[in-house]
Length: 100
Image 1 (cartoon, helix red, strand yellow):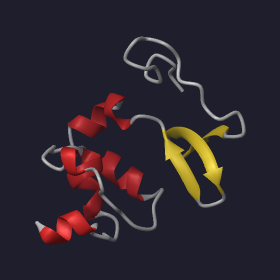
Image 2 (cartoon, helix red, strand yellow; image 1 turned 45 degrees about the vertical axis):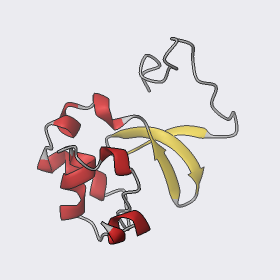
Image 3 (cartoon, one colour; image 1 turned 90 degrees about the vertical axis):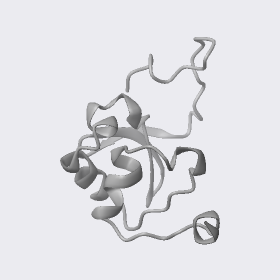
Image 4 (tube, one colour; image 1 turned 180 degrees about the vertical axis):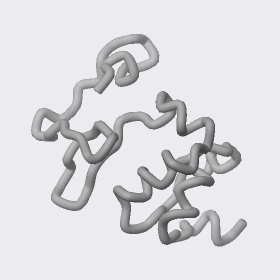
């Protein structure tokens, strides 16, 4: 984990729940929320994210059973976690996407 990436806009550190276990899954850093839930470190600092790198998307898909995009404000971005990942993972549309 890079603490520079895990800071509030004012530069202060984010206090994570001390019960969460920091770990790695594959190439990714994150936190074990439960046996089937893994919270990833911020993806935007990985060069493969903004480059919409298919290899990066495929690695992300390896962490998931399904893909749910509820980040309406980010849907216009051509990033791996937005448009690349659904090519490698089953999709579950959210209600706002069904309406659009």
